[in-house]
Amino acid sequence: MPGYQQQFVDYKGMTQKEREALAKKLYKEAGYGPDKPLKVEILYNTSESHKKIAIAVQNMWKKVLGAETTITNQEWKVFLDTRSKKEFQVTRAAWIGDYVDPYTFEQMFLSDAGTQNDPGYASKDYDGLLAQAQKTVDQPARLKLLQQA
Image (cartoon, rainbow, N blue to C red):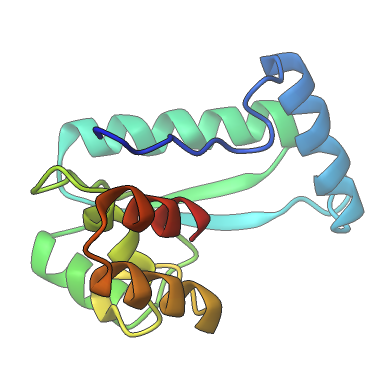
């Protein structure tokens, strides 16, 4: 996005081996392991490509962590209803920006974003930064607020 400095996750520079080692460490710290595997469900909507993604994730989590993952398919309308009610553990989803601005992605995590905010993220600070950015006319200053958010 023009003028926006891309943000990165802390583990961006880690190798796959390092990421897997960290995942195993965090998994163990959370109380899971061979004698007590994490049991989790991945929800996805009807699509062969979504099914392939869910199966791939299921296999990776089993191979690396030993997690016991089930995958559940739902037709689109049922899937949306399940997501809106937050009746899932993990869901497969995607978003494509409908205009060239970071706000198209960031607004999804506003506390009151409803069905778009799948994880139910809520932060007054984040909401305030986005509200301030929406009122800021100076584009470089606005983008800095969105980067800060």
